[in-house]
Image 1 (tube, rainbow, N blue to C red):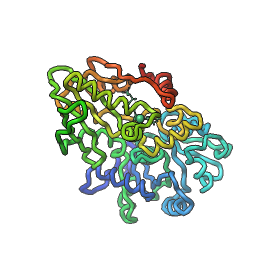
Image 2: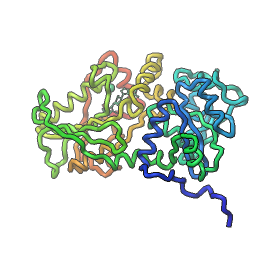
Image 3: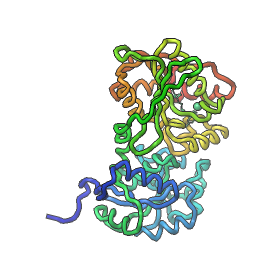
Image 4: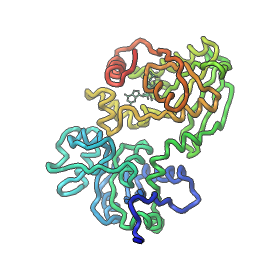
Length: 382
Ligand SMILES: Nc1nc2c(ncn2[C@@H]2O[C@H](COP(=O)(O)OP(=O)(O)OP(=O)(O)O)[C@@H](O)[C@H]2O)c(=O)[nH]1
Ligand SMILES: [Zn+2]
């Protein structure tokens, strides 16, 4: 029998007492500070850095770690923007004659570059399996709320020895499997960590309960008004965080009005719950949302702007919301939303939506285009 590892072997899990969430959390922190991390798949291992803001010195540091020249990995969405068609929805490796140079990297990773200029003729893409080390490095960049693009070199050690190889060089190592399972594990491990009575203007009988993911990520908040009867469908709103709309009163979106309107509607009924979910910018993070706004100012709509950055139009997951509803004892809801994806997602996560309650507000001159794009491109029901 061959002693060689077969590609179908399970991903080698770094041997330590850290949980999978700890390992992904460490890798996120490393990526965000511009350090290299080892991402280990079942049959491949890569050393990866974020493409965002990467300069020539970082490219040189990465190059000496691998046994082949560095390559740029992007999502199929971003490849399409660069006019390179990818065979599937996953991440791809850009293959360019002459390889990846500092100048090419700067242009290709620039979220505002949308022409074919920087892509040399004769370039192509190689699809990456979702569970591979290379493919998972792009998923890790998304988890880190960075642009979904990495620069990688192949690890000189075989996948089964890559963890030891990385540790010997003081690099954080993470299994692709842990990255791909991160969202589900984090949602399962949500715990209530703090609770208080917070009388609101117009809804004085209100409690706020904070749920923390076990990885130490940003807490989701349940705002429970009155005493909802778990035996009856509960009037509920899943509200995705919007710093600009909720806090600053931005007129670019309808979030602030939806937040205050939901609280008023629940208070008028006497009881219900609003989940304030840490999913800023439809899950791409505040910084990327600001970049998307910039692209919208140059003429793209809200969907195309996300895709130009390499994201899907909506990166949100609703497993944490379903888990919080369950922990609060609410299995059936009347959901205040115009977004059919929220209804479908809750049903997938075994929360029954007995009614969709429309939740729209008059447009203003700044958000009219945004609301129209949501209706036309994303199927929102207004
Ligand atoms: N990426 C991106 N996010 C945006 C933009 N405008 C608003 N958002 C975010 O979109 C989310 C809106 O959340 P919700 O209001 O809960 O969701 P919705 O999909 O509009 O659905 P309903 O309001 O329930 O009908 C928030 O996370 C905002 O930060 C934008 O132009 N681009
Ligand atoms: Zn908003």
